[in-house]
Image 1 (cartoon, rainbow, N blue to C red):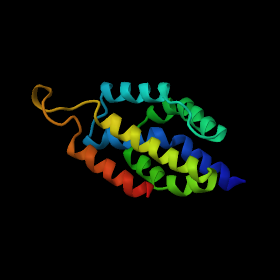
Image 2 (image 1 turned 180 degrees about the horizontal axis):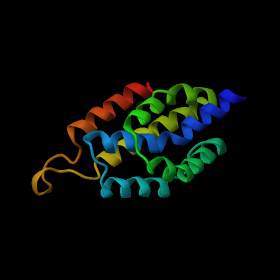
Image 3 (image 1 turned 30 degrees about the vertical axis):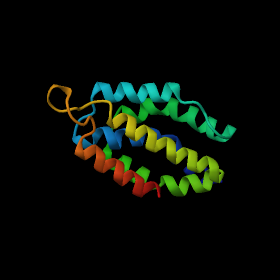
Length: 140
């Protein structure tokens, strides 16, 4: 039972860890990134099972605590545990939906700010792109 509780805790903190990992990749977390993350959390429908829905709701409630002291190293450590936690705590289709949701968060947060001079160019920094690539590896 403790392993299931540990897995659930990792999954609850996953969305906020993705935010910290990607938004903090370039050394700053700005208000546009934070606003985008808040928007994603508030508008997230709970696809899949009741268990996945409950997990998303718990993640919404926990996000403010995680974001009060963002730590990219802690975020990476937690994200390295997500795949295993998802396999232990969720049905296979829910685990895949959860992983896709984390990638969605990463991509939307990364595109929330940036854009170079005068807002031209890519809105996603090189550091954010590298963080997203690493996230794909961690979630594989």
